[in-house]
Length: 475
Image (cartoon, rainbow, N blue to C red):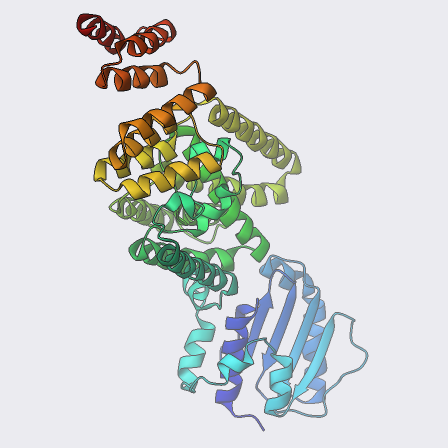
């Protein structure tokens, strides 16, 4: 015999850890229906004592009203299982292929019939009261059902983000690196130079512990909703796809910043949440409006953090809404689905054309310059050498390198850097100007005039012309 609390606990855990959910029940709570809409399955758990004849009548009633059951469920029912608790001598033969009657007289059989993959976890839980389990099982509020569901994809994403954060933290300590760009952060400069992987890796990186905690709390909330409302593969498509779209839009409008964080992908989940509210027809207009206001407050609250990438946020929101809409459109009109696919392909191509046509912002030189201003010359040289090793060097890279060498060692070493660089960039007005400045400082006006003349031929800047006048005056 199985006691009542064991049955209700098993039903609660079965709902929490599988795709099944509460569907309906009779007035005396002795006939509970569970449904798995994605698989088209129903489990009907009957507590009350039934004779063989009453059971046969129950099955016949299901057969007679099968169309009505499907209409109420909103899905095609492929499998219907009746579980009779603490009962024997019931019918098992001459049933339709999709209708099954199972007897359940002990806990072992109950665990097999209401099986899930997390028994190791649930066996450690303390029992609640029967009324508590009943209240949790029979609560038909969609939002509360979503929050109670076990959400493995959400937990895995959170765990991955935490592990990567810990790894990058220790990598920073051991390699003396504190730049997000060196961990895999997304920048316009790196992307147009072939580091396309950054459009994904940046989604799993965070600046600091506050940044990580805020994003993971947001992912926990909205991730559980989306994992409940959509299929798992759809959830991952929304998360990754929305994050990528957000990053592309960010690259289109911002070519100077380093972008990291899961917030763009989380905003994609928020977009998918809004689309579910609109298309599911399960919520009234007031609730939808309240949810929309809540989303706006969330986006506003996220803006209080430093270095917030609003382009990625709103791009992710658009991406999530677009991808989620695709799922619904495909169910109703495939022609519109393919039109939308063509539209997003065209939008992506236009974004990429704009990204690759936009003027580069050499972020490595900016970092080297910033370290120089701070007086951290060793870090400046490290960044410059890394820039050269990666093949990202330009004339400004060597100007900065020569300035640091001059400061740390001597002007002659700085001159040596610039003279080698001018062979590589002979048409650089900036390098020619820098050499003119260097030779003027050591009173070699003949060479100074040679380089300033070349600089003026390349670019008639006022500062170049002024330097030429000064050289002529002192020569």
